[in-house]
Image 1 (cartoon, rainbow, N blue to C red):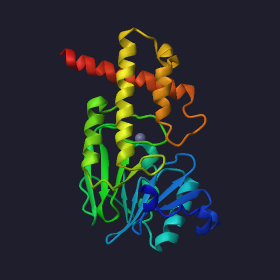
Image 2: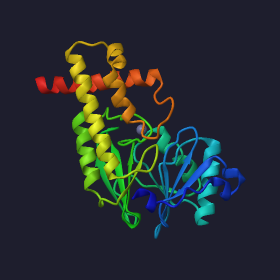
Image 3: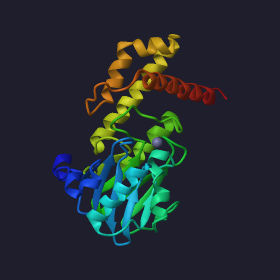
Image 4: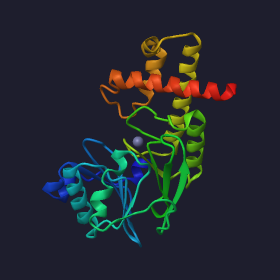
Length: 264
Ligand SMILES: [Zn+2]
């Protein structure tokens, strides 16, 4: 289903030598997804009646010049508006570059034609979900990542569940879901991601009840198997040990915060 929607990714080589590290993927006639090395942030470039709208420009001086060049090669117009799914550097670090060149940062309500915004609290305390109706795409930022483990630390389990439910209610079953990083996705994969995330939390919770240490939780086969489910692109290796450890620790923090709330 998804493959049929996507035009074969166009390598940036066809957009000129300067843009060699930017990958361009045409999702529809209105929307291109640009990605570059370093951060791997999924950057959206929309053609809208209001101008050229950019979602989540990542930082990096050379990247930004290439990004800007790639956008003008696609649309022959400069970026007019910027949207950020959240305020982490890898999603907003390029704002200033485009604002210096005349783009406007749109915060709060979005009044651009074809766009709507819903706020959730999961990955950060303010996660913006952007829906673009003409292309039927939903930009979900780091609430959903297809290249990493889940990071639901600001909203905890409840915030995560609410956020996913809200996203699932936007658009229809054919809606294309653009995660903050990693391969373009769909609702079926998002449901799977939700199930795996909840299974992960339940598993860590059960290990904690048995007083397992962080190291013991990491070493358990059950833990490793669940973490491997987040490796949808089959990366080898997937998580460095430091990231895996941090994931276990942060999950325990979320569980403890929940318990403290429940005990009040
Ligand atoms: Zn983030």
